[in-house]
Length: 361
Length: 237
Image (cartoon, rainbow over all chains, first blue to last red; front, side):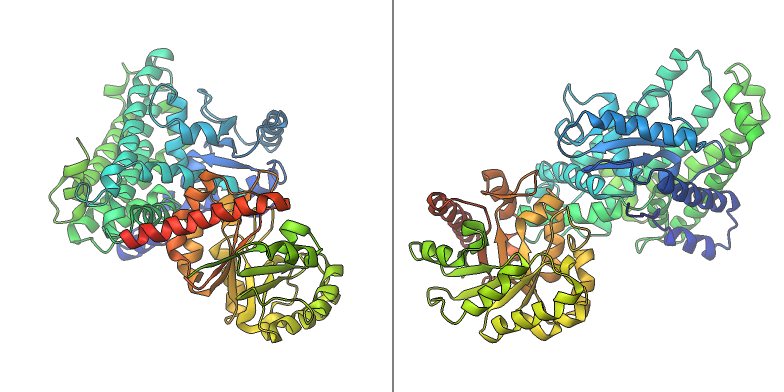
């Protein structure tokens, strides 16, 4: 089985050097992710049938693994359907259990089969279920293939192609001249709002069990992924340029090529680009510093077994007086303030202008 | 402008004499002589001097798709004979054992991008190392292989963006889910049109769909329609 490494994060390291910042929790989580991923590749050697990829999501794909991180995975099928695909998932599950890796989350979004047909053809409309939208957007924003990447790469490219080719405002001159892929942006925003709404659904369904930990994750890692998605859409203008040269086909292929490469980076690296790319000024860089300071503290909180358990068990009624929850809220506010500076404040960069134009309506 | 022809292997397997006879009935000016099995190479090389190839402005020879390390030197030596006669030679990169041994074929060597079954040579990233070792080599762009590897045609775009100036020949067909070369469907034609602008105008298109003789004219017409449709659109644009 071909080996496939987690993508590197040179910009993040560059920021860390620039600020002489010590982000120990982030560094440890990255190292843990690399070790876990290597272990996963060995554990799942030969488990994926042809025309499929075993795709991981969540903290492992983001490169942010702590001791209690789940292995969120799906067998992505991009070929002929076959009854043996069920045997493949059962085999993968058993291998993960035997290797002592955790089971995935409750909702069943992961740990099963995903078909490229659904992800590609059901974008919007009644057939685009919550599960389908979530899998598709996370496929783009925080996924990584274990071993053979061919099916994964094909599906990512095809999905991006749909978003771009069918974005008439993007490809037809005289309208969305800035080059921001609005169809894709809208679906990323829709995913984010769905996550936020589902937070309330889960609180109700589970009678607030695990509420505090989910709240913290919503404010931090889920927000990070969303912010990275916004930044990726804006990068089509800021990084790749808004060239209108060539036919609509030419422009579509250029944009898909750019996005496919850009989205291979984990969300932290994309946000490092947002804070420190060629467009950055001192205000943006300082916001980036605060952003990653806050995120490092968040990872440290998750990595602390006692703190994690405390948050898992905390009731909403206990939260106002709980010092750990207060600390988590402070971290969340600091993170949000940094994001506000990057996207929502007139900081003299394109990020603010593009967010103002495309981020709300 | 682009010339069009057929692969003899696609229309008559190893029987290149019969294939050439079929082609005399068609308005084609390119041909790829196939020697896909190692045992087919020597007879084809031996026949080169007697074959009437005057109809064709582009002639290439497809090397065997498998040979051992011990056989490689002999294969290269035989293909050199074809090159000395002014023909191009198409090779699958995953068959090469000693890549440097193929330098002797110069720009007449056409490295073909592979289908998804192969371990390498499928993408721009994978082909780069071959062109690093063989800087003079050309590219046989298999547009069907590229579409099979990435149906969005983004990989085709990357291949042509980086190696487009090297393209001397294009294999055109469609690859089925069983990885067989079949007739080009309208969907495939639509996808191929997206990257035609990146293919040099002096390249030759070789139809690789496995066809009975009766279906050759229809497939030729489909390919001509695709290429002329693109050209007329380009002129209008």
